[in-house]
Image 1 (cartoon, protein in one colour):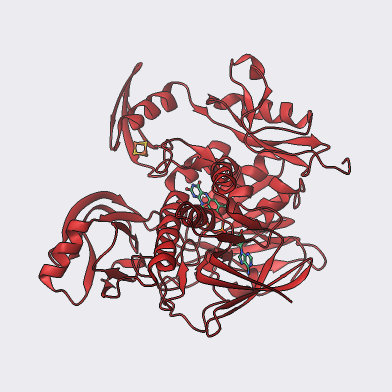
Image 2 (image 1 turned 120 degrees about the horizontal axis):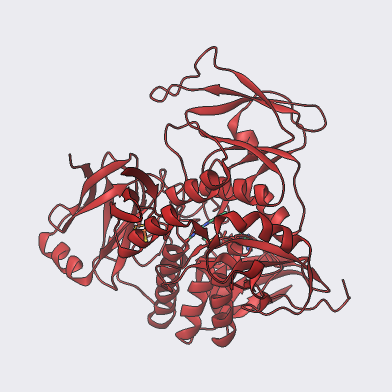
Length: 124
Length: 418
Ligand SMILES: Cc1cc2nc3c(=O)[nH]c(=O)nc-3n(C[C@H](O)[C@H](O)[C@H](O)COP(=O)(O)OP(=O)(O)OC[C@H]3O[C@@H](n4cnc5c(N)ncnc54)[C@H](O)[C@@H]3O)c2cc1C
Ligand code: SF4
């Protein structure tokens, strides 16, 4: 048996969770809603994060488009994902919610735009 | 000079201003929204992380996504947006607003004015840290703009002073962008930002957090070369001798708090000395009957959802003022007790729509009893932290009871339950 203290990051309330881990079974206290239990289980057995960052834009009114993963990805893949984003450029216009990378690193999760980027009339 | 009349004028196109403008337009008011930046959205535009909108939209959005939802409504409802336009003067006697833009100056004469100018970051010089004044010292919001809007990195090796949310979020962002973030120092014995940000921004990337620690000197001539840290007593906040440590870095990021921005109106409206923002009542009306206010210029909020809700109230009240020519005048002041710091609003009206009382605790409490009154409302809340605002709904029933009890002030009290 192992005891872990965690902070639920599923919402800004940030409940302090106490988790008791026995093999694959996790018992949680300190949560204000069910999401806390799900979070503690996932965090202990397979930690995942929604990652937000930027991708370079070509021909847009601003040089970057902000992006996020469409669902949480395993924490260990964050570094690889950022490398992948750094190696690409996207042409404006870009619509909010547009899929910019499909099936990121084979996770089945997409990277989507979180901002509109119009084309710049003067080119770059 | 161009002169214009309008029903309502909103100054500042952040979360509060966008919400207020939509409400006004929806109620048939001709509404003009003035923003000094190229685009409306305010700080939301540069906050690309997620964590916005859980209360209002029941989903977790990034800042630009949250802003987009309001930008669409602004267009739909016919709010007239004037960006790249700076308000230079608000004249309460003549009820005029003077703007400056590419096409020169203009005068607006609104029937009701809504101030939503947000907050600015506390600058480095306000900290009185001795040493040189080299390049490489930035407030977190400025660094955030560089990285997220202009694609520029501020340096290579950074240290963050202050554990407010913006600092924590920037520690993660700079790490992901390839900078080495050496640590975050916080003078207080507890972190300033939300617990979730300590966890997902620092722990996830093994960035150390030094509590009861601050920067006592900066070094370097042209460019920052290093900083000296020292430990501080957690109770007296006195510097502890013999604890100095020098760290080499080329960038210092400051996240030491926000100051409500009210230069345009503070000569004729009252401000609250603790909130450092304008005093408002439950209609989000300032002490001047022509002026309404909402958002970070009233007090520093930690959740955009609360800013949106108060922005809506300001818009609804201003529209009511335009249509009816008056708002109910009877008001009872809200009073702090010893554990309360930020408290919004300052006055409660005896009539009108329900609203929310927001306050911040001075201390961390595992379990606390909150009472409003005496005799209006009581509840128990768990996990009270200075970094997280508490929201207490104040309903029409509470207003009725307030009238019955005939209280001359409403005390907001917070006591730890052991
Ligand atoms: C870095 C950071 C991270 C945050 N993270 C979260 C989070 O994860 N979740 C969450 O819920 N909340 C978060 N918040 C809080 C929330 O985003 C803010 O409280 C909210 O967006 C503030 O809105 P506002 O309208 O009061 O101010 P602002 O967005 O600052 O808007 C004020 C506007 O007024 C304009 N203005 C000012 N003066 C003038 C003038 N004289 N003339 C014309 N225009 C003027 C400014 O340009 C600006 O656009 C965060 C805040 C920051 C700064
Ligand atoms: S347990 Fe529920 S209420 Fe608490 S932080 Fe997690 S999601 Fe929020």
